[in-house]
Length: 155
Image 1 (cartoon, one colour):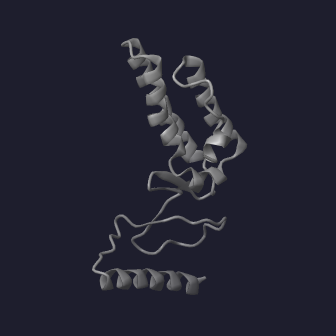
Image 2 (tube, rainbow, N blue to C red):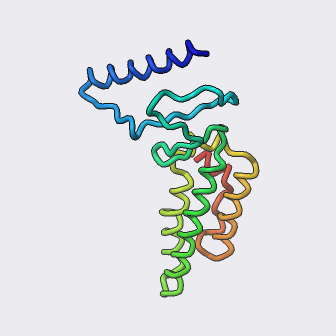
């Protein structure tokens, strides 16, 4: 166990060397470690924080390899967008414009990097995403021909 810890520190040293050779600087304050194993007994290298989830290019990846955290963030964001669309509708924006805004904001947010995270979605996560799409149809923010979430993932 001690050997693995030393190997990980050497590996981090190798990354620092590589960064220096490529005119880059490794910022230890922004460096995080995420472990994809059930064993939590190992200690992270000194100065490196261990986290249970990371936001990488807008996609939340957790240590359980599920998309639940990302879907929760998406649902929160999309709910805020639906409220903004309700305000727009109250100010008299036409339905066709609402449909365009919905596709440009909500659908594009759901489809962003979907090939990277959709495979980690459980059926419950897909159901939660389908509910927000069904709610948008019911409220008139999207066309009735909007596909289910599984079909959006394959587009």
